[in-house]
Image (cartoon, rainbow, N blue to C red):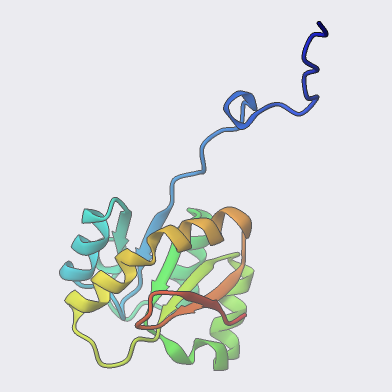
Length: 147
C-alpha cells in the first residue's frame, strides 16, 4: 500500500496567514449621528465619529489626510464627491478607502441598518483593495465601485 502524497500547498488552517486587519470606520460630518454610529458598533464595527476628532466645518483635506494616515475607512453621504475634483484628489492623495451612502431620503436609523448589513462586503472590498477608492452603497446595501 502506497503512502498518500501530500500537497505542496499548505492548507488554509496551516498556512500561517493572519486574520484580516480590523477596520475602523470614520463617519464624516454628513453621516455623523449617534444612531448610525450605534448601529455600526452593534454590528461589531469600530467607529470614529467626525465630531469625536474634529470641529464641524473643518476643511476636507485636513480630515481626509488624518483618516488616510490612520488607515480609517471613510463613510460619507457626499454623493457629489466624484464631481468635486479637489476633494477627490485629496482623497486619492491620502490613500483613503471611501464608501458613499447614496440611499436617498432615509432616516439615520435606516441608514445605520443598511450600512450594518453592508459591513461584510465593506470588509471584503478593503481586504482586496488597499485604496484609494470610492464605492457607493444604496438602499440595497451592495457597494458598487465609483472610482
